[in-house]
Amino acid sequence: MPDKCIYPSLLLSGTPKDAATQLIKTRAERIIVLGLSANFASIIPTSACPCYWINARDAAISHIGCQVITTALYLDTLPNAKVTGDPLADIERIPSVHVDTAMCKRFKEQREGKRWLAYFSATGESEESIAYGLFNRAIRHKMGMMLLAPHDIERCEPVYRESIKYRLQTIRHNRFSTSFIPLQTRVYYIEEPEPLTAMYACADFVIAGGTLHEDAQHAPDIITPILYGKPVLVGAAQRQNSLLAAAIASDVVRHADNEEQLFSCLRELIDDPQSGATLAHRASEWLTRQPGSTARVMALID
Image (cartoon, rainbow, N blue to C red; front, side, top):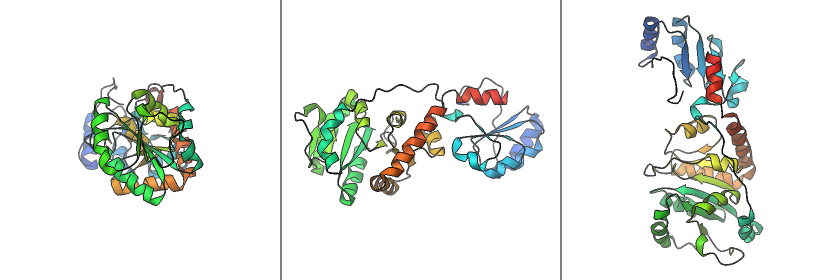
């Protein structure tokens, strides 16, 4: 479990053959396997102790005598599996959100003009240039608007000054003075924590800051956009984050390994809003199942 296991344990290493030798020598009381493919199933028959396969995906695992514990995504292919939520997500509770759409009225002209709204939320170091690059490509495909909110307040002014070179008509949230944002506006720039959160309600989809570049050191927030019912797209950074890794494994966020894949995912969300809505619904159901998953898994193992 995520740094919380109170039981004596031994982490097996090396090849499956080496692991099998270790199991025989240690006389383990139970075997717990975390999410590996069935290629490692050969080690199980070497021990007579109970086996629990957590976050299983491969149907072949069902035939080697383990209690299979999985996410709902793989339930159809894993007979007799237990669905507990993902203990590696390490979610104790789900925060509450108050969805207020009052701020979204300012995007009236964009909605009437069938423009999409992409929210690059809580971006970190070196991520804004990626955001602008993706957005410039996306508006050549179909016109829309970018909502951009840096994560760190102290970066907001230098990021804004740097963005001038892109020559995109930009409105700064803290200087907004009219009822509606003009249709020709390309970027809505957010520099304060409160509207950073409130803006989730207005977007069509969210590109999670902290995942676009390894220079961004803050933990990405994928829970808030999921709670707001928005599809989430993530990049290749921060894959070691337990929550992000769990969401990717359960296929409840769009994920990309490079900028070309990011653009492909972005274009899909623009062209097929229903696929985004389906993803958001699946993510919401997944998130609801997570609190208490570690305790449920431990209860099965005990």
